[in-house]
Image: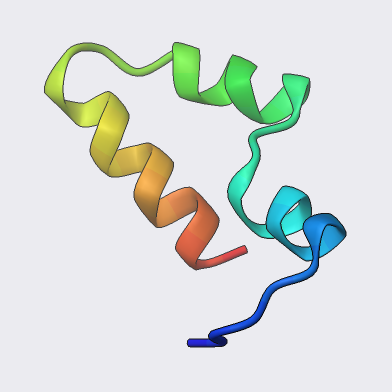
Length: 43
């Protein structure tokens, strides 16, 4: 993993966009955090 990140890179890789939040919101309880992590990992 990179040690030095630019602000736009952080936003791109670690921020959920509104349409992504909608997909995450469809999950329930404990599955939500796991889905969110996997979603960004495979993006």
